[in-house]
Image (cartoon, rainbow, N blue to C red; front, side):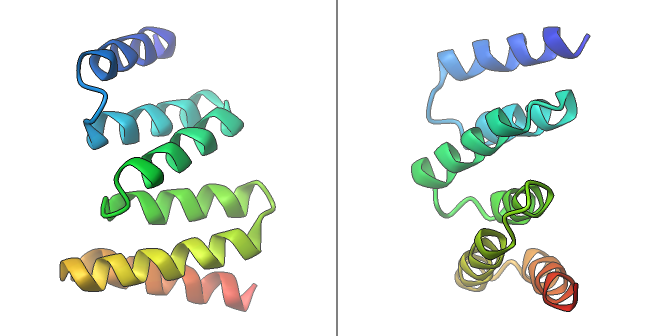
Length: 106
């Protein structure tokens, strides 16, 4: 069933390659499938394509932590914090601050 979902999402992306939400959904689907390198690459493509997509940063950093890339994760949290501030997205800002603090503690 997951294979089917990723195929559907990839088809949607083919129809609209600039849709950030679809790109994000594809990255999340790859994560669920355990294809972590592909998920990471997709998040990084999204960051390059749409750096203002606030929801990306928390998930990208969490994956970087999972992939034993804590320094990259800290940079990603910092980037996300700045983007969330500019967007006045206080919910994302709070989540990013908390996740970053938890990483600093570990």
